[in-house]
Length: 191
Image (cartoon, rainbow, N blue to C red; front, top):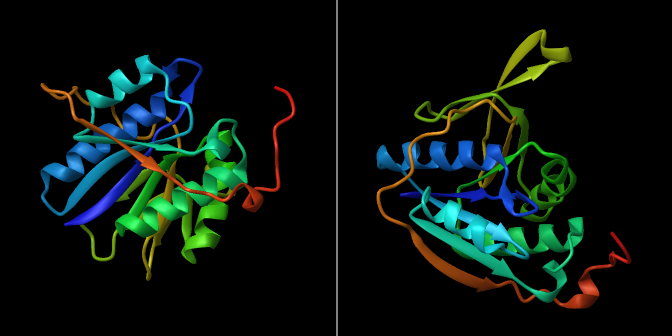
């Protein structure tokens, strides 16, 4: 069974809608039996966000590390790439948000893989899996597939529907990223 990591993103104490969409898509994929999905949250995890995620996934992994206390593209990329390598994930799904557009190309470089950005649809059971993304201001729809994995896919918000929550909460786990502080050259002075 192929593992799909679904990157969660919060704004303050609220989970972004695109995260709910991707969690629902992950549940649909898991029903087919070909994939298992796992929600992944990097950095500070608000309790309200944690509870919401646990109702839409079978497993939530909270990736922690001192360098993840404040957002930096370097720190988040190193943490996500390290976890994806360790778990042997076939795919990483994330929202095409400002943050996702900022650090996921770095993850693709670290994993030496491709990225399909701004996806609005997917053919999960096609061989190879095919993703639909707009080009030229939305005048053309391109079909993108991967020849090597893991694949990174960012989905445009409002592209997938939000399904019903699970009847029972998923399991929760923590993962210590173990990033040497000297690897992250960026530091947050003030927000």
